[in-house]
Length: 168
Image (cartoon, rainbow, N blue to C red; front, side, top):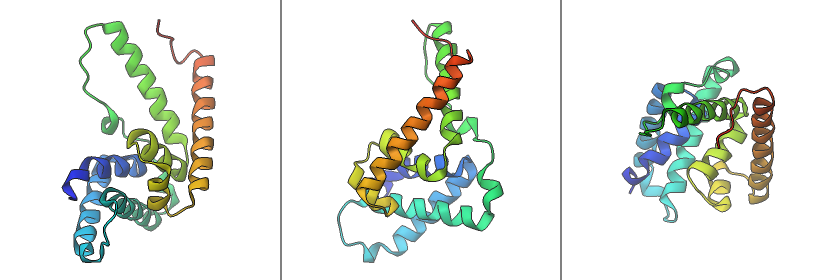
């Protein structure tokens, strides 16, 4: 059951930790915690349960390390995908846009970043996110709204400064 959610667990950890190695370590420790507490699992959504453990593990590690390490640069290698595209111009434009989105996402506070990752990348429901993060559904919705607005503003700023070329 837990192995099926490894990709989602790692994806959340790497966006929160902003470091591939730390994300791997967090996922490993989260899986150990999940396995050791599996007897206490009362059924329900195993994915949400595991992601809650991963999320808590990430925040535990961030608290131990202090605020200065939470502001490190986002690791580009963690989020680079290997897509094949025959049109070199399109490849350059997509890479440029991905970099700008990555930078914009990295500028968000961790609580905003986590709800964006869980909703937009992991496609979780508002209720599942609320369960994972431990906040009411209304708070999930308002955090998502603020995070999306901030991303939009940041991306608009890049476009206005000419740092994003438009694609036809």
